[in-house]
Amino acid sequence: MEYEEESAALVNMADMALLFGRMLLSLLFLEEGIELASHFDNALEAMAKLGVAAPIATATIAVQLAAGLAIALGFTTRLAAFGLGLFCLLTALLFHTNFASHNELLHFEKDLAISGGMFVLIVAGAGKLSLDMLIRRHWKTRLVS
Figure 1 (cartoon, rainbow, N blue to C red):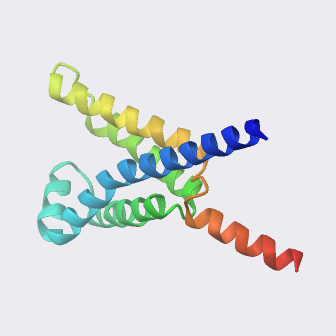
Figure 2: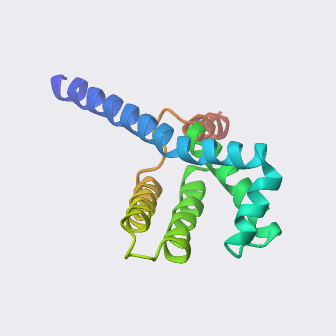
């Protein structure tokens, strides 16, 4: 019995850690997506200077907002984490490769680290404190009854 209580406490800590990690990971994308959407014309102009066409820039903003919110809520978490993980890898490889600049190297490494966090989230899932789990429980009880 004592082992079960200890195991339940560890699960609670793991789920709290997953929730906290999801919030921290999603914060960057939600903040940036809101900022870009709020100043849409300026965002398109800045991205055009980097060679990013308007439809791709618009899709980038939509992905940051939708996937960032999905991860925060724990909804379709693995899919959203996969999308943002690839997004960060591509951002690092396409825009932060001037390693002569320490700032660019730092952005490259940060994008890789965020991507790694997303790939870990793919494996771990959202945890019990998520819409994914709530939906799974709902369907499980509907199928059983």
